Image (cartoon, rainbow, N blue to C red; front, side):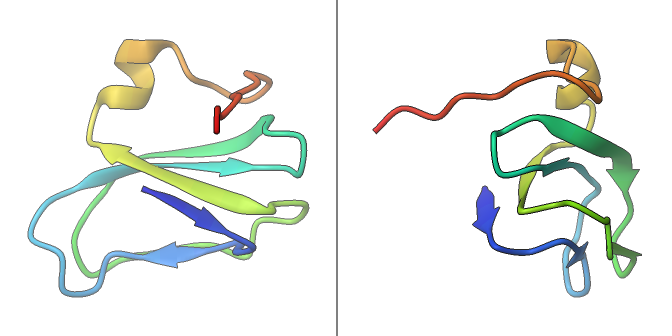
Length: 74
């Protein structure tokens, strides 16, 4: 799930862990949080414009890390 204009997320009420990628305005990954457990916070990332939430382990499996550019089609 892509969340626009946010620089932090939480997993309060979730039942499973997720990976979170913080993106700048150009879609570059500036920070990753692997396996954010339920009822936790990840945030206030300076320069983040959006967050991409993925299934736990997906970021590593896809090779997504800081510096990777993600493009979204319309």
